[in-house]
Image 1: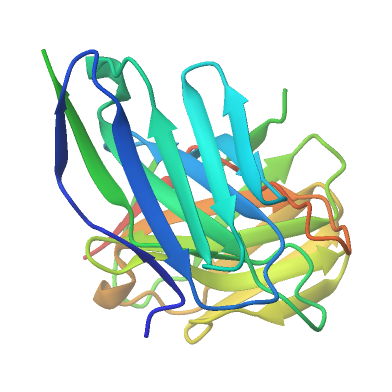
Image 2: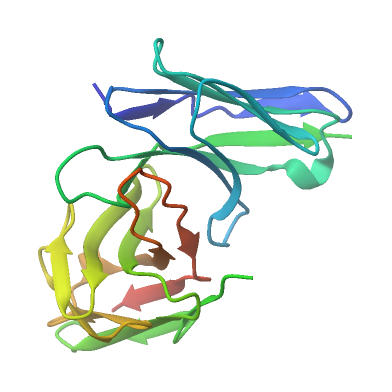
Length: 114
Length: 115
């Protein structure tokens, strides 16, 4: 079982719709969860971080965390063509001296069509 | 804003050459990381440094070494470049906090081609 799993997509949504991206993780000790956006040929850019169960909203983005189900999601409201990118889920590695190490999912490709 | 810079955006080297990739961050972060990213394989951690002169192997350290002589600078060294090291190399940095609140910020990446 992969440590951090995402649907690879591509996920295609029409402009203005809600895009829903999902991520599951295997390490129950993980405490920090991140979503990165990566445009083709560019480096990952941090867009959301979440540390406690529930929802966290930032503009059009909402991150949702359910530690009991080991599940993290990202909702993008009013999707725009400029949101078309690969979205990476990242989870901190628990234990030992791993302060700061993250495990990344393979990424979900999102396409927003006009 | 956090700024992480990398010495080159594109690099072409020959098999067997020694290659240096440099990364500098300006946010006084304790942690610095080197990843490589390949299609279908995602981001893989090569090496990690949590303090000056301290380093830890990541998931795929073979064929690489690192150096951290100053807090802001982290270098990745390919001792003898091989074609299977052709990849996108990404440097990142973060604070080192026990609670796990360690947002990583990435540099622009170096696309290395080994011929």
